[in-house]
Length: 186
Image (tube, rainbow, N blue to C red; front, side, top):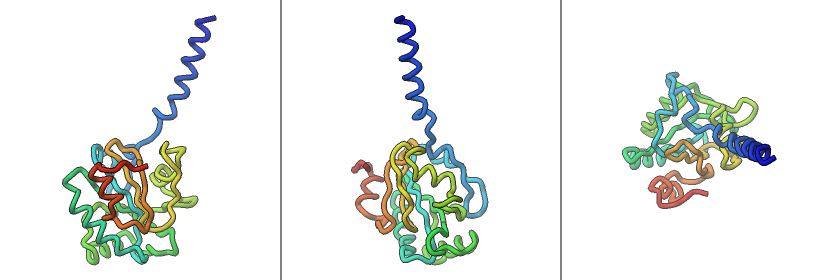
């Protein structure tokens, strides 16, 4: 009888632990750069990552300048920004990947990695964004993308730890303190 109870408990504990052990991290994803090259996100191990859905014809588009400033300030301190152009909100990113890359370089001097245009919500949502926005996949929270320039914070172990609203300035205390490690994101 004791043996049966022990095995029942062991089976229960192993099934309870399995989902967390199987949970994906950022490092399980591969995407395409804006130039069409494979970009394996596992190369970012050990870095804090800010993932941002971007658009060229949005009221928030000037945030590219602050994103670049943030990248320039903290890139050599284990931090990186990854931009994902998306056309999900009022068709504010109608361009091709080549047009988007040119726009970002000419108008804002963007040097942080930009990926190919994807969908960040809806039926055709990219798997990375499904992971970022669904607690069942990320284990942390549900966070629907509400507009262009929503920012997701990923820790050095590849776990999503927080997000900032589209209107949050990239140089805000919330984001800078997270990068510096002086504030815990909830």
